[in-house]
Amino acid sequence: MRVSMNRMNRIVPLLLFLVILLSACSNSRVAPAAGGDTAAASNRQPAELSVYFPYPADWPEEEFMKTFGQPIMSKFPHVTVKYIPGGKITELLAAGQKIDIVFASIGASPGSLLDYRLEYDIGPLIKQANYNLNRLEPTMVDTARQLAGGGIYGLPVYTTPAALYYNKDLFDKFGVPYPKDGMTWDDLYELSKSLTRTDGGVNYTGLGSSYGHLAMMNQQSIPIVYTDTKKSAYDTDLRWKSFADNLIRFYKLPGYAAVDPSKISEPHERNRFFKDRTVAMFLGISALYTSQEIGNMNWDLASFPVLKEMPDMGPQAYPTYFYVTSISQHKDQAFEAIAYLTSEEYQTRQIQDGKFLTSLNDKELRKSFGKNNPMYAGKNSKALQPDKYAPAGSVNKYNGPNNGEFVTIVRDVVYNTKDVNTALREAAERVNKKIQQAEAAAASK
Image (tube, rainbow, N blue to C red; front, top):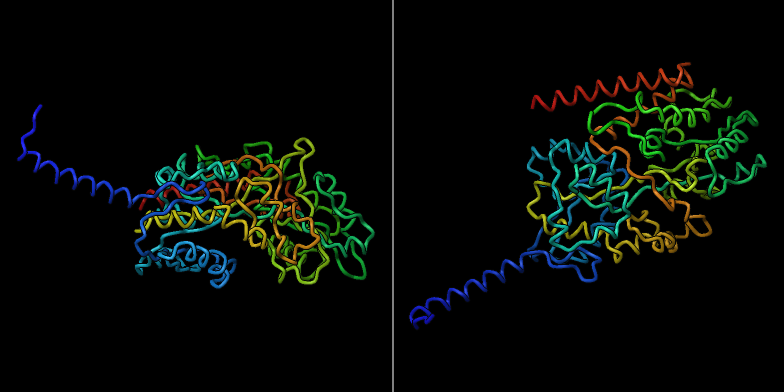
């Protein structure tokens, strides 16, 4: 078929225009990441990324900027990071505040993201960037997918410890051998029994922890709230009784009778361990404790206790995710930033400095934790993460707000003479009522 010269003169400029247009579109997309370590470069238009975190005491602005903000801006000079430490999201949004990234633990994610319809499925951005999810610890990815009903709203950047902190001076004082890695819960109970006593008018107890987090991170992956029925599992999954019996026996030891019933909860027990030094062991599962908190304590670490029928299984992970929000006007740049926070390039320094525990599926990187931090010199820091995390149990918007019911279960059995089955049933009733009220309120909006 022949084409006239006049027609050719019209076609050539059109083809050149299409080539330029396609090139411009291609440049605006996220290109594949070099080496697969980070999300690839998006367009280089200047962007201010506002990052919201619900609990500013955990990440003060100076520490946040040093750990997250400055590294992002150094890597991506076209990006400016603005930190929003706490505040009510409804008020912030009403005032016109833009929020590009929310970061929160899995327990706090529903109340910081889903309740305000800020969730956004980053699946297309992951595909566009050729981001390799297999680099992340798999149960943390599964947790994110469960929260998103099969999609994915964010990437896990770090996780909390799952380890036993212990005060060596108290063990030495009472001639009790130190905890060891691989202990069963029965072994831990025997240690706690040996350390729960009164000496010189001071009441000492063996173990402290956060029961709500223990419930949420339980090694058997028992659900707190069923995702499909939106009903509590406390009274229907029989494993909750054995879980409760296992934990409550520690608080039925005679020495705990002198403890104020309102003060057998994480903040109080943490203070008795770190400040008062009257608790010998503390299951650290909700935070990585700082040198300021530990002070001059003669301390060390042992691995999280295991169930004798599941000797290789650690607890479920409790990661913190960084989420790109639905209202962000800079989604490419926001994803680029959070992907960088999960890169080996970024994580290596943070892990070696002991800033947080990695979300990467990299055992060698885990081994380097704290090597540049004198706080961990000579400490059994490998105990901070289990070799194997338990699979994610139920993950939904009602788990986090209701894991605290387990504190009431413990108190009801230890101090209010209720049997375990009654305490579990009543807790389930309270949970179900709260869910019904929340569902009704959401339906009325």
